[in-house]
Length: 213
Image (cartoon, rainbow, N blue to C red; front, side, top):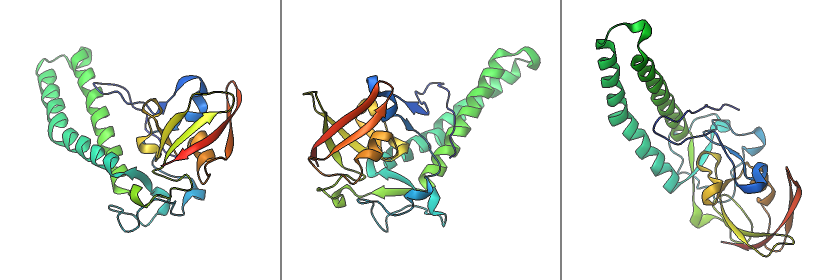
C-alpha cells in the first residue's frame, strides 16, 4: 500500500477519517494508490469501458463515482493554474527578503510548495488510474460499489444510511464509506435482511441490512 501524509495548509485533508464510537469499522485510508491483490476483479457497479487513462497494472485501479472524479479534476486544475502560481509568488517575495538561513517566511513557503506539489502528484495518480462506478448499473439486490445501504445496529432502533464508494473519496462523516473499510468489506455482496458483524474498539458490533438502493 502507498499513502501520502497530508498536512493542512489551507486545506482540510487527512489520510485517516474517523466516525463516532465505531471508529475503526468506518476508518478509511484516503489517497490510496494501490488496491489489495484480492480486489483485482471488476466489482458490481463498476462501469466497463469508462475508465480514464487506465494503466496495464490492474492493481492500480482506484474506484470513483462520476461526481468524485469531477471534484478531483476541478481540484487538480485549481492547484495547477492558481495555487501553484500563488506559491511561486510567495517564494519569490521570501527570497527577496534575503537572509535565507533565518527566513521563516521562506521556510513556510517551501513547505506549502511541497504540499501543493505532493497533492498534485497524488491527484494525477488517482485520476490516471480511476475507474468510474456506474451507479445506474449497480445491483439493487446486493451491496456493491455505488450502493446506498441502510443498516441498523442490532439492539438499536436508529437506522444509518451509507454510500459505498472507493477509498479515494470516502468520508464517513458525510455518510460515504470505503468498500475497503471493515464495515464496507462486511457489507459487500450482502442482501437485505442479512446481518454482518464487525470488530470495533468497544467490541463486536452486529448490523442488519434493511434497505439497498
